[in-house]
Length: 300
Image (cartoon, rainbow, N blue to C red):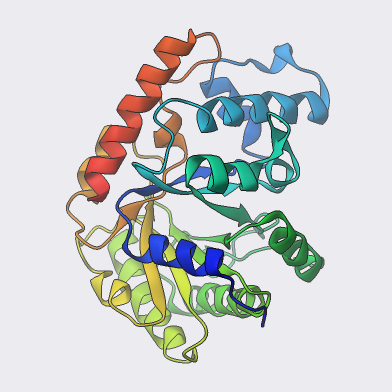
């Protein structure tokens, strides 16, 4: 395992005890067109993947450099791989986040989802994972995030999701990084509450198999039964439990999150709600600042 630096220890302490939330800025190829459309950039305004990714990089850069996007309320930010390899104002993004903004950088590492089976969608294979993790360490990344999806309360399917997540997490920890395990439960599932009970039990079982050097974070759908995940937040191997917005509006996500005392936000779409490329910098900053404040207050 890689040697833990003073910077790593400082970032780990911030993630464990800091007040604030994690911004999810990791839309990938499949979700980028939708994110751009919500930002007021129509598909006919760019041509090809390079132009599309350039537009989303400009959006992310504008967010990261905005007035209120600082460590005062934002603990961390999850980046897409292309963003990690890019720069803002000539500085690598992860380095700028930590050195200039005081925000801990994470990297999305999954390569998308398999087709649904047993009520879940497992992660696709990651054949180049170890090389990507080595690059992430070089760029100054603190941790990673990998997402699966649970559609139904199928015990065998949920166990398969959690087992796969922890297998990947062990590789991440071995590279000297902290994994965010994200088994999302679809907010529209007719068996959402039952799935969350099964998920909590499965995660607890797999946490019990970790040794004292293997710490993780969890990113979970805001649960139907408030505070059901407190037992996970209290586990010694868990640095933090964070919540995804899952398609809820900013107001709904914040209201639901506020009822869960040991979860903080890690929102994507809810963070960027109401933002537009066509806004003046003043209007953009005001809209983003309002979202940041709502999400911060719900995360306290």
